[in-house]
Amino acid sequence: MYQVALSAGSWLSEFWQAFCTKFVEAFKPGDIGEEISEGILQVQHYFDVGDYKLLITDAVIVTWIAVIACVIVFSLMVGKQTIRPNAKQTLLWMIVEMIIDAAMSFGMNKKEAEECAPMIMTFGIVITGCNCISFLKIAPPAKNIAFAVGCAIVAILYVIIISIKFIGFKGFWVSLTTPLKAMLPFKLLDFVIKPTSLALRLFGNVFGSFVFMEFMSIVIPVVVPGIIGLWFDLADGLLQAVIFSYLTMSYIGEIVEIGHEFKEHPEEFKKQKKKKEKEADQAQAAA
Image (cartoon, rainbow, N blue to C red):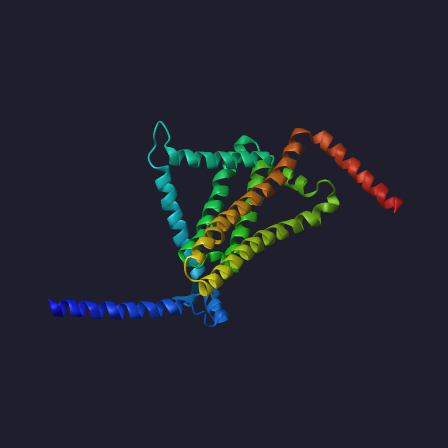
């Protein structure tokens, strides 16, 4: 019995010394720049597929993990169909209604808002999951600029395709030449500027938050990073997803609203357009 107690005491003593050593080392920042560089470095691996090399990065893997996790969470929230919705189903219903109301406020009708709501919500869910996963000390995909650019390209292509579906090619063309035909080059340039803005906003905010949290974890590794992470990892990640989805809806609304005006009042629309062109010609003549 004495030997067992002595052995246990020796083990506890060694454990305590090792714990204290590790605890002290946790507060030693070391080379902060090098540790942050390792944190933001992209993990890459090539797979040989016949004569081709397939590149897989950490952003791809983490994105799939986040997407699968989001699908599982929302599937559990939906649950079984019931006569009276439970609290989780009511919450989802409120989110969908909020998206539909926001889409209608941008100029879409009820049917159009309901049709684009699933895609808008998909953007929000995927980006939220990918951003908030950093709270689990997993590098968010958006720290890789390719993720943000990919999301922005998909978003602007969806804006163009769904707008043409709602108002037709003629209505889409009218939206590009309103209020003047001279605006066409600028409207086309807008389809480059908008996704660029979406990508840089998402990348800049997530990358900045990630670097800041890496710095805080190195300098103050206990308690404080967890508290600050409630904003920079969770709240800010959710905010960026909301902004991305909200702007995508607004881009669709800008096009669709003009298309609806043209369909409902083509004569007045043409008169107003000619009036603006005449005013522009008079302004140029006066200059």
